[in-house]
Length: 268
Image 1 (cartoon, helix red, strand yellow):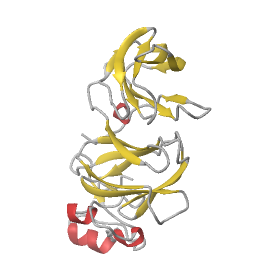
Image 2 (image 1 turned 30 degrees about the vertical axis):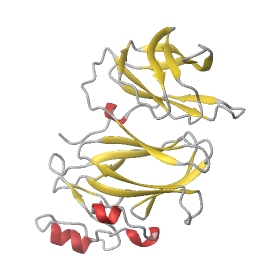
Image 3 (image 1 turned 180 degrees about the horizontal axis):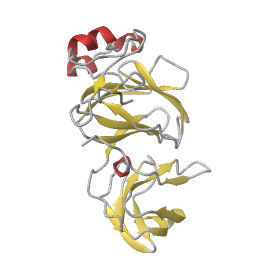
Image 4 (image 1 turned 90 degrees about the vertical axis):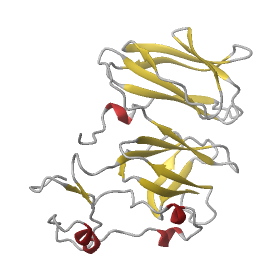
């Protein structure tokens, strides 16, 4: 939090420091991967800043308007893995993340990160391991996707565009691994066609208020899933996620979270 030196420290940051590209691609033990920045190393790296006298925390000064960083959150979109733990550079950043749930956005420094996803409560045999390069001033949702035995991740980046307060901004992401190619109908008007697995549509603008959304099979025109009351507000951006196992009794679901581009601050 800010203090009289006008900087904040990351003693409560969930995300660890970035790795080199070589470190990010190494096969290592999750518990020994992360190199923590202690207050001693922070004092050497930032000698002009007075740091708190607490040797039990990780301290990284974040100076508004100067320090470059991004934001990342994690999403469990895998109907086959209903609870997962997520480790980044060896540090657990999400515990028991339920299917269809998101973490909060976490502040993260630019660089390379090794992300390992495990079935909740385990630390051996990861479901998937990936490396991700985070850019400065970026906002990313990293989704865990796929069915059991074929788990992967997909990085979905928000657009930091100007948000007109009289319009809402909406896009579509298809994360159901076995659903057919689908079309999106917004108030019965076709707005996106032939959306396939892992596809991320362009943004469209919409009037604030309530809207009906139908996802239809592109070939047959049959309704796959419907959301009769999608509420959007002016000056805000939304990503509409289609998730689920079409062969399961619960079928497909539609998630409409608010994007971080609407409210996150980079201090500029």
